[in-house]
Length: 449
Length: 82
Image 1 (cartoon, each protein chain N blue to C red):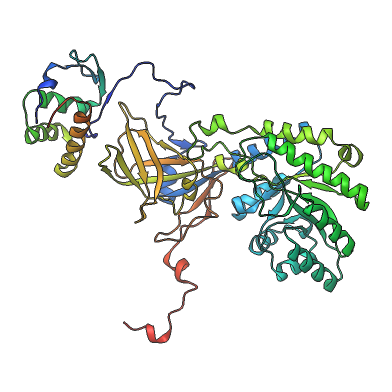
Image 2 (cartoon, each protein chain N blue to C red; image 1 turned 120 degrees about the vertical axis):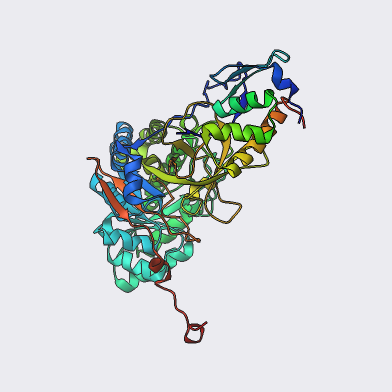
């Protein structure tokens, strides 16, 4: 019998060229997720398949809760639905004690479908329609106001329904990071936030219960949260002093970075991203310095999404083919592209082989199956020679993939959960043609060809 | 194709290659070493392909593509000249 062929490769050896972290370009393989062999998952569900780990989800949630409570005990987490709104995923967080944070009427309906009462839903976002607000007011949700027109609309809805809703004002501010997210909420520095609060309180149609901010996404400087918390607590003190309203909670939103590596970042995410402890300390410092906190012990709300779930997700993908590029790099065509791994557009996702390979590696580009030049899952990374049909793991993939993935020329893959007992549970089946055409109509005169 | 420089290389079966003329050393995988040895012994592309396909399971087209790619690598390392 002939030997298995691998493509020829040669590299010049260099001495003393390790980088400052001493990292070697050794490609480690991973043949299982939470003890379940990759082969078994692919045999059962096909390829590509997005796999989520219940143990990792629960572990990261509990760690966040524990670490935050070491610095400030009165904390409530609100699961950010847009990060991953599969019902099973949301329910894991709800079982752990998280309330729901939604940013649209659709997400609001999703939370209600899971049985979350209105009082345990935080309704954020700039696009709330009148019918969304009516439903939220009737069901007692906490509504976070984004702009003045929304404030007027909500006031009108509240008066019509003769219900006083619990609301918060969303505030944007300069916390020293760039870009500054100034498009959401009312500005802190120029006094717009305080003016909006004065207007809200004088209207007497709503109860101002909290203040909210969300300073950005993938914030790599934990100290920014110190400034954000300090600004909101100072504002809360001012609201108490000037308007005699004592707020129940301070919501610092989300934005904590996961261990993913941003595109263009030289340092790997494991080194660049602050740990949960860093964020907790920054927020805890601001709370523990505040007179308002000493007097009133407001609830701290966090809407962390990405940092809780990104590492719990892995995309298993198979090699469709390979080719040699004129640049000298090797190219692999995978069956999962940016249509299912949309985060590849802003992260250097980790690609891991599922079996050990001996010998030297070659710079390899991973493309998806789309007929588009932009379908690059991972740019050149040293990798062993792969064969058609072999699997690789793409990670972290738990956040923002199965909520943002695209319906473009391919059926979207199944999503599977590995439970804490190692059981495989299907959370979303692979799409079929009927899923795509179900809502489509062909007029009578176009039916015959 | 001029492969004279390959004839001076010291190669072992584990993939280590030393070039006494330049002092550079290289690491190649097993097919990489085999092809270098066959080229150094004077075989042309067809001869190398036959030799590789006697040992390894690979289609002619796949091998041709990889061979061209490998030649470009060797040229960029200044080990062969076209």
